[in-house]
Image 1 (tube, one colour):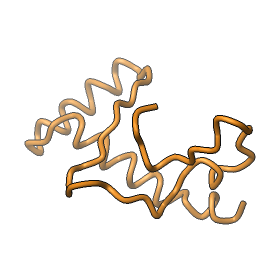
Image 2 (spheres, rainbow, N blue to C red):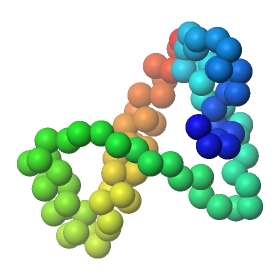
Image 3 (tube, rainbow, N blue to C red):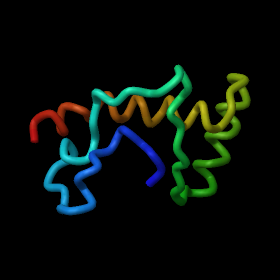
Image 4 (tube, helix red, strand yellow):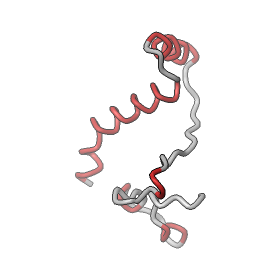
Length: 84
């Protein structure tokens, strides 16, 4: 991992048991820059095309549409992480 402060450094020596062991919500992003990382996964080709058409119709980039969708999903499912 690059110098990413969002993740706990002590994971090199032990296995994480929960998401809280990995993610640090109090991280600080240096210099006002966005803390961007690459996300890679396979997606159904038809879904990708539908996403591209929807994003284009709203004058958005695919990355923006993807970030918005993932952010919404995380916010809807965050209570699961807080319960554990």
